[in-house]
Every structure is written in structure tokens, then in C-alpha cells.
Length: 548
Ligand SMILES: [Zn+2]
Image (cartoon, rainbow, N blue to C red; front, side):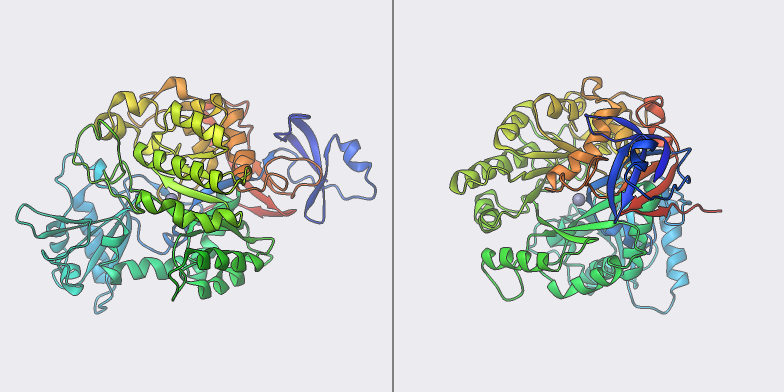
């Protein structure tokens, strides 16, 4: 039995209780101490007596890159949490970026492996021209350099990398950006172009499946109060043999989180039939365990708004050049999804631009007409520019939304001033509209794109404050209670796991987020500053790391 300062259950029948009783990894009872004790012989554990327990927070859209980037040098703009609980400082000038790359070149002198760094975002460097190979050539003209951007949709490489992979003015792959003379300028937009610089991308892919990176992801979950994290671009369909390392790492009793894998759409090796991919997904699910499970299919339909690669409808981007890319041609969408939908495999599609959201909603309508699975809970991921009309249609079709609330802080000013303009920026990440129109929704960080941590993500949706101090769309703010429901029950629902997770009530898994203060009663501007003791996963406590 765990008595607590308060237990926030998110169960409308009894929103707050004073204790929970746990047996065999599940919640036996939530109620008064006396009610919990009435189940029979018990032990009282008072370690959370001064803490607030909430249902285990579920991050339904993150990436294993969050763990991998503990092993890859960070060159992002914002300070960022480290796995040991400390902070990695942000990089604010090109000079500092190039110095860091020179330092890495010295530290690994003699290697012909490329230098790979991550987290860079050109949109903040408004005083500088766009980063190109010419900047990176000042670090090295012979050692290949690969700068992976924060969005994970772009990379910038130097001339040595272009030469190593023969990326030239004759390259026909879309997304190879060019200078005025038609020569590649070093920027590679979206995965087909980034994959041309294979030796750089390989370092990222290899690190994502390194057991040390998977362990780091688990510890970051404990540090930030996340009990379940969905890896939204797992590679089980293209690399089914790669699953073993995930099970070996995550199934250990000491691994501090549950991981759900949403496999990114790909044909299995040697197949040209999407039905084979859907059957493979079912076979992968046969190996599911308590800690590592198959969540379903992920589709990436377009790029990112801040990278100008999202597919935008009229009138397009506010400033900048429209480099919108379809990652899946809309006319192929139903054919790819049909065998998954018919096997009742839940599908989440990455949609950033408003054109893309239309394409996905239309595809879901067609799938449901062809095969009437009414409780599909297919989801729009990111949902950044979803309009009220789109939300109304999603509600009618039984679709869910996972809203990228962290954008409001990390790119809110840039969306207002640069990408979409003031009016559309005020209705980005429109959680209040989703709630009003009856769409079940969650909120996400897309970690490593922004740092993992649902208190920060809730804070963004509740306050909608940007770094310049602007409140971006006050009418789209939601209450702390709605935000907490979104990151617990809302996430569980769109994963078809609401019978097992998302609230604190008898019969559900004993997964709790253990907080130093109460997110529903503190000043809303202080939600992101609430301390995290750690988590309880399946009845086992996991404490956050604290750097010296
Ligand atoms: Zn993502």
C-alpha cells in the first residue's frame, strides 16, 4: 500500500484518493487507507507519503533517437536534459557549432568515420545565412561531416560527404538542395535525400539500436515521469531480425519503462505485397511481452512546417520557399493501409500540413467504407494545422489526434513570424478545438525532436506561451486537468490500451508518475517546474537520476 499526499486518479467516479494498494503489478484498490487495508494482510510503504501520484504518463509519440542522442553529440539551440539528470548547453552561434565540430574532429583524429552531430535547427539563426557545405568545409575538407537537424527531416553535410557518396549536380533524388549554380549546397531534405549520405545516416541508425541507447531511453523516461513510451518509427517491418536486441534490453526486470513499437511502413525484405507487411506485423506481435509491445503501423505522409517541407494548402507558407514533399503519394494511401486495416491493426499517420491531414482523413473514410471496423482509433499524428472542420470530420469517423503541443514553445514565434503567419499560428496545436468537437486527443513531444517530458508538454498546451513571451492563441488553451487526461487516458485510448492504463482504478496496471507537487493545483505557469521523483511501472518503483 502506498499512502500519498494526494492520488490524482483521473477516474471521474473518485478523482482523488489517499492511497493505492498494489498486488501482482496491478492496482488492487484506490481509496482511503482503511479501504485499501480491508483487502487483507499488507505492507505499508510510506516513501510517497509527501508526493503526488498520477496515472503513469504515456508518451504516444517519441523516437528511440531520444536514447541514441545521449551517445551522439548535441548541437541544438536550447539547453537539453542529459540522461544523468544534468543539462547539455545549447549552441547559439555558427562559430560555436564549427568549434564543436573541430573539437570532435581532433578527439577522433585518424578515423575515417564521419563526424555526426544532432539537434541543429537553422530557423533560430536569423542573423546567419542558411547553413551549407561551405560552412562545414571550414572544419574539414577531407573528413565527412553530417549535421542532423532537430526536426529529423533535414541534414546538412560537407563537401567531403557529398564526394564520398557521389551526390552531384546530376543527382535526381528529390530533396537535394542546390545553390544558384545548380550544385548541391549540402542540405538534404527528407529521408530519400538524407539516405544518399548513407555513411552518416548509418551512424544514427546503428546508434538507435544500441542497447546503451535503449537503456538511456528507459532512464530518461524515469527521469521525466513517463511510464510508457511509443517509439513511433520502429523498423520491425524492414529489419525483423533487429527485434532481438530490443527484447533482450527492455524485458529485463530493471528496465524502467514500457516501450511500444509503432513500425514505420516498409515492405518486408523480398516482398512487394503490403499484405506480407501486415502479416509480418501480426507475427511481431506474437512476441509481445509485458514491457515491449507492438503498437501498429506508422506512416509518414509529409515533412515539417519549420523545414518548409510539409504539404500546405492555399495560401501556403507565410514566408520562405515551399519545399513541400509527399512522403507517400495520396493515391497510394488506401492500398498501403487496406491490409493493415482489414487485420485490425491501428494506424497512425504523421501529418503536418493541412493538405496532408485532408488526405489522411479521406483515406480513413474510404477504409471504413470498404471494411467496417468502427473502433479503429486511427490517428492523426502532429495534427499541427488541423482546422475545426477537419476535427469535426475526424470525430464522425472515430479518429484520434495526437497534438504536437511542444511546438508552441520551441517554434511558436517562428510559426507566427515566418512559417504560417499570425492567424494560423494562433490555431496551431488546437487542443481546445479538438476537445470541443469531440475528438479524443493526446499531446506529444516527438522526442528527440523536442525533449521527452509530459509536464513540459502539458505546460505548453495549458499556457501556449512562446519564448518571446507571447500567448499564442489564448482561446486554444486547455485546463490542466484536460492536459493531464490527454497524456494519460488520451494516449492509452489511441493505443487501444485504455482498459489497462490511463487511470488509477482497480484492475489496471500499477503504473504511476510520482511528482513533488500537484499539476492540477499549482499555478499553471509552474507545471513544467514540478519535480519528478520517478515512476512506478508494474508496481516497481524507478527513481529519477540526479546529476551532482
Ligand atoms: Zn515523430
